[in-house]
Image 1 (cartoon, rainbow, N blue to C red):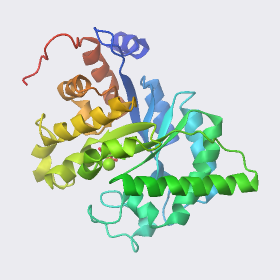
Image 2 (image 1 turned 90 degrees about the vertical axis):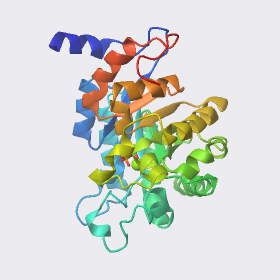
Image 3 (image 1 turned 45 degrees about the vertical axis):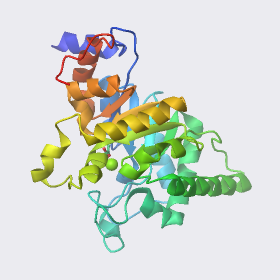
Length: 301
Ligand code: PEP
Ligand code: MG
């Protein structure tokens, strides 16, 4: 088994018909990132930046900068897609308990950050500076449509013009991407992706929750999160079509991608990147190496 794992790690993830799939890891810390690279990840597809917030303290720009630098170094040259603070709903932060109601339909993700522009701009300044030192990409969670996408881009510009004015070096060309995990964003994906968007990740955990009005924390709802294909598959089709027409890469994040048949479905739908917990990556790679997109699927349609 050990030998087989070592073989898989070094093997590029290319299907029998020659389609390359990028296999990325979800990570929450530099330690996590090192483990993911050891496990054979092509990079970090979802770095959960809110883990820089500890206890009752939101770190300032420099503290964040050093943390993000450590993350980038841990990835040893491989790309790191960092998701800006995704707080609210199931993602709790101790010192913000008073200001956030933890409803999945309330303040969370980029929505929360847009209502605290100082928090957003500080994080953006730290990230723009870090992006000078390696392959860092910035992604906004819980984008609901072109309006908040545009608002987020405007705040990126605020951060850039501040840094410029202060003569602080940063990466002008850092790729910005949208996390599509709300049905409205999937329906309007063509408009979001046409506006300065460099890549798109689909978060199927939240997309399923919001499509079926099924709380992801409630184990009685778990049936909605398996059993593909279903309504979420239709939304994914829309995002994939928008992405292909803009020639942008589309990656699936979420627990769904850890199931080999479901992962295969996504690739057959036109997805070319999968992002998951590192421990599942090689099992998925083994499945994809046997996949031939010119042959009918092995699972029940
Ligand atoms: C998702 O929503 O599918 C996702 C990958 O992000 P998280 O589980 O962190 O909300
Ligand atoms: Mg999510």
